[in-house]
Image (cartoon, rainbow, N blue to C red; front, side):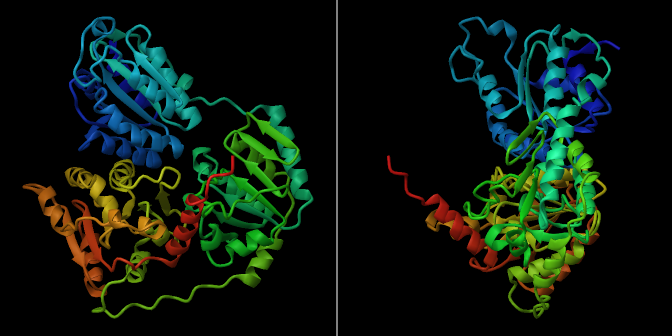
Length: 561
């Protein structure tokens, strides 16, 4: 087989396990898209715009471990960069591929369309370097294989996005055939001596403690270390809490799982047991103003051991170049049982009373929506929660083993969830995908529901219509938090046009919601959007408390000069 730069890229994307790539056409990438289509193992999936294309790829990476998005130069890539920056923040290897101007125009006085109107065509590459772990510009077919391999290898190793732009007159140029994929996917091993020293120091740290707690963070998945965290928990026998962004990364039906640690709004008993402990082993954690509720819940001091993707540090020790999964696995073989926090947790835990069903004809409330969603969550379900009160509604869902939960807490870009749900559903066709989305967030990226219809994805969207940006209301209210109401359920018919099978339903009370859920479960030919109409101020108490503390953190006066 004779390879071109474009078909080489397609081969590599297929070899790393991708079955799809997301795309928006533009004149600088049309030949490249043709070349990608020659690979029958890689399906081209089209998006409504480049921002949604990036978000869709980000969602796909959550399901498949990696993803690719293909856009055109400047007007396309700059739009996609928001999503790529989010993938960087969330530790997801998304390969962004951009068409680029003809190589003959690069050292001339030509002014090109889709540019800033100057002779500088490198600004896109320079921006990409800030939000990716590897950024390359391909202007030579001879060098293309090495550059493509470098970008993909680095993205997979660092669990961060990479950027590749390909000149439009190079995409179809012949190049060398791909070598063994092992050169791209093989990971550098942990430094053995450093690993042994880190494990010895950590084991000694835990040997001197009686009341340890494990705290699981969102980088655990990026490290591919979920099974190893369970092994360490089993060996220690202590309580295990997870941060909100890591919900589902440790099984909620595990006997040592105590709940979500989130400062003042932690699950019942969790904050108390973390405060009572004499040591916290932080595994893949990210402490930012959101996850610490305005810096009010951040473990620190000599009782904290932090195990990150490639680094372990505790008081007096700092080790690098060791993989988290290797460290956890080795440490599990060295520790002794320390179950005091489980014994104490059994004493202090306070179960929330079960919520009684609302009267069928009573005005719909948020709590009733959550109550009716709970039975839908099975082992093969993934829940995707948009930034806002959907975060807190999602935290209230008890997940059976195998269920997954997706959230974008580090980047926190509203509108992320609609295309991310589309991408995730494409990457995990055997799972039931449920999305929790607020009306304000939905308006930013609603077009991608049309692509769910196009691909016949049986996604269920619970759209909470409370007439505004409720999360912003609880942080700082003003007229800018009000939005124009839409007929959200009716919008699906517009997306269906002549051939779609999506369904749009509206619920204003519990009985209507129950009927809508039945209809959604029966619809296997497309998405079902259930518009849940509730009062503007009907939100979780957790959001109110969280918003107050985040607002206080935002309002801190400048330090004296």
